[in-house]
Amino acid sequence: MSDLYLRFVNTPVGKSAAQSLGLPAPVPLKRWQRADQPFIEGDVLVGAAKGGKAIAGVGSILSASPANVFHASGADTIADSAKAGDKTTALDLGGDIEQKFSALVFDATGLTGPSELRALYDFFHPIIRKLASNGRVLIIGQDPTHSRKPAQAAAQRALEGFTRSIGKEVGKKGATANLLLIASGAEKQIESSVRFFLSPRSAYVSGQVARIAKSAQAATATNPVAPLSGKVALVTGASRGIGESIAETLARDGATVIGLDIPPAMDDLQKVTDRIKGKALACDITDSQAPKQIADFVKEHFDGIDLVVHNAGITRDKTLGNMPEHFWDMAIAVNLTAEELIDEELLSQELLRENGRIVCVSSISGIAGNFGQTNYSCAKSGVIGYVEAMAKQLKNGITINAVAPGFIETQMTAAMPLTIREAGRRMNSLSQGGQPVDVAEAIAWYCNPASVGVNGNVVRVCGQSLIGK
Ligand code: NAD
Image (cartoon, rainbow, N blue to C red; front, side, top):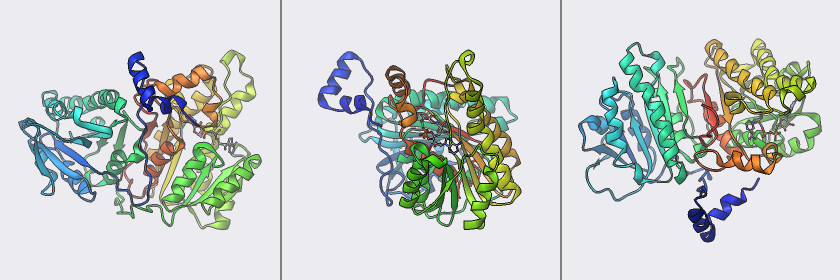
């Protein structure tokens, strides 16, 4: 779907009109484009508060990119930045800084109390205006829910407010800010997440907190061009919109995709699966036989499955007093109940292989609630509860996570009345709607075999929407 305003404000006339009228001027987002594209290019500045545990790992991840990596110097509070390694060049933050940075990465894992938060100011204050358009801010902290020390928990929790505020400040440049919270011992499992959050693949993800737990599985080094080679994926609702993009993105990353959709969508679905050399399955996921039908299809064509993406969803909007009962029942059945029943069948028949991935598609409506969507918000909120509980129970290295899209340009949002659609597009830090591929890229990050500790997360793909917490 096309955003004419975004195109207009990026013409010379549109730019000056937006400036003089004080209107939002969204910057076109750079998305991932080619197979050999590095995850980050240009100048990158890294820094660490004293005692940082992730900085050495960050330095070595960046050393595999063509970026010129600098480490911050010039203040005692950030003296540990040099631990980023020999391949980085010191940059005095007190001096004149000429260049623009494609990313600013700060390791805050060492913060043990509120007084040490000064390190954030010492690192970011001199440099934040030097963040390039479409730049990335990534902060790495320790999960405060694991801390028994209140002062440390306070300092680590403080990173959330800080990151979200930076996201709101840099959004007008098309730049993003995110926070990775790692559990003690998970320092070696951050690579796929650091790559994702620094890359154009996370163009529409901002103001988010992702958690990485310590996993018994090794964060397998994967082929960055085709990390999902040899994997079999099921994507529900794959004939169009976000599902079509998920199917294409997982296939791009090497997976063989079973696309599923309702029988009336078979023509469109077949076109998608033919294009990506996948298989098409006609199935209504609310049918009582659907879980068995899916399991039988998997057994007939493959001996198991690695990735299950529950994308199929519907809205049936009406205020509660006006809502017919079948609107309620359908929204709950498609968006929530079917996912649980399909997983139950695949798990009980042991068809989901070791290191498998389940990904659910929630919505910011499930986080914030929405007028006229009691049924949909209820179901999408239930998805979050399901993911959080399942994450604690799954075995064999299987993870489960959710994405919660905000306003994404699809047929679903094109059907909205104009004024609501315009408000939805602009009410976020990036002042624009996301594309289906933005949701698909976040799902591909969850599905990456190296994302072993990424479990039980709900990451919003919403450009840091003003709606929600
Ligand atoms: P869409 O309507 O374009 O696509 C949904 C797909 O699901 C369709 O192909 C449809 O045929 C399929 N589907 C519906 N009921 C089904 C059933 N019973 N069995 C099998 N397939 C079924 O929607 P979209 O915008 O691409 O949304 C995809 C997912 O993202 C949904 O879960 C939606 O709730 C969620 N989401 C979308 C947005 C957005 O802005 N577009 C925002 C938040 C969440």
